[in-house]
Image 1 (tube, rainbow, N blue to C red):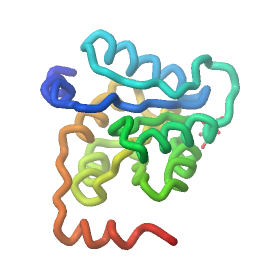
Image 2: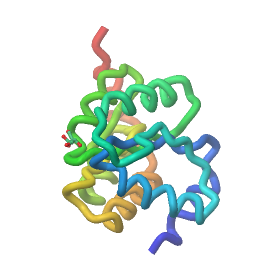
Image 3: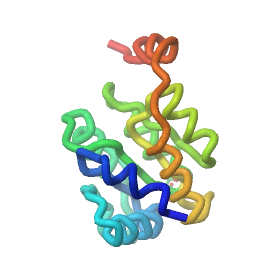
Length: 156
Ligand code: RB5
């Protein structure tokens, strides 16, 4: 089921930035073991243990790394996905999308040019989450009218 992701990851120029809190730790570990197996380059911003933790502590460093161009895209996990998504989206350069199925993931890329994928680890299974990521990474941005809308998102 992971074969579709191989070609995309082979084209990746930057490490995938990844983070979670304790609630997303197990799902992040599942992703990291697959990344290691496939030789996919990533940077892990924590959490580094399943001990109770605060999602902003991991979301902000990941967001800054994406904004600096050090990582692309970002993938983040927390229990519902909401908390880590809110923290990521405080950064002007981040368009993080909370996705619980492949259709939302596809539209998050095609219409919103999302640069971070957020997955709700207590709501969906590991395999579903991985498939959502494959869809996210394989969907190009459509541009056009969607670029005009994206340009209106930042608040100064
Ligand atoms: C942690 O218990 C949980 O609140 C967190 O992972 C997330 O769901 C918050 O939005």
